[in-house]
Length: 309
Image (cartoon, rainbow, N blue to C red; front, top):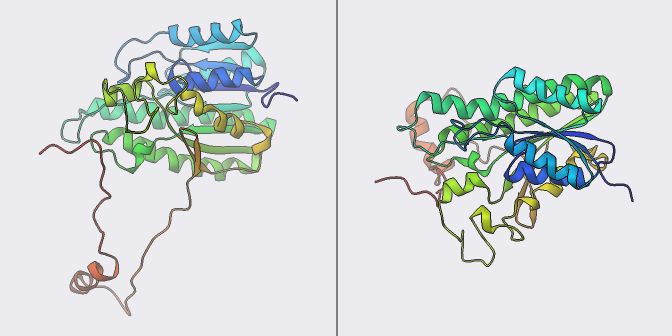
């Protein structure tokens, strides 16, 4: 049986570590030529720009008989996104798939966050998706085919001490749907995967804790995650499926990959409504809203982390 990505060219941003690395290795194993794009910076994006992480993954792919090239580019710049896609075209003649895994985070509450920290996180995630997706789409549209896979996060529900990250990941969902609608007529699919795995980013969030829960194998630390439900390799198969020809009819969808479970994100809908015979006034709203649209009108509780007292 032919490998699912045989002959395809796939670029993976953030491909030097964690989930991106797992996807890059798996894509190569399935026959793709891979651009491993990684700027090599620290989790907060402030230190250590280097091609080392990307180069190491490329060397691993080549040693296993695959084809790969590195691109140490900053996805938060339009030129960085263009150079990643151009690397694919220059080395392999085309680009068939793009996976946007690059990401940073800063763990601070709203009142602690510096302007540059907000800007950096938004730039890497949102502009990083845009810069790469636009460049890839401009190559894929004349081809009449292609697959974009964006990477979200469960943080979009409102993780309290990561406001910039939560905002960026909520934005990725909107960008997924907008891009899916726009590119469908060109034969290009756009989907989003919300992963859960142990990485250096989750290490920075959970510290040195060894267990996420009381369930066996729920390892938090990335150096202990191989072969457990928190192994980043568990995220790769759904991404590879969405990049392949078998998923050509799947577009504008969001999937969660958590442990050994894959879930589909359903429609966003208004859960309740109240109607009036004419224009509303404040007194009527105050009287009726708690009864008709309540009683649960506070945000869902977030079990971690606790807000400071």
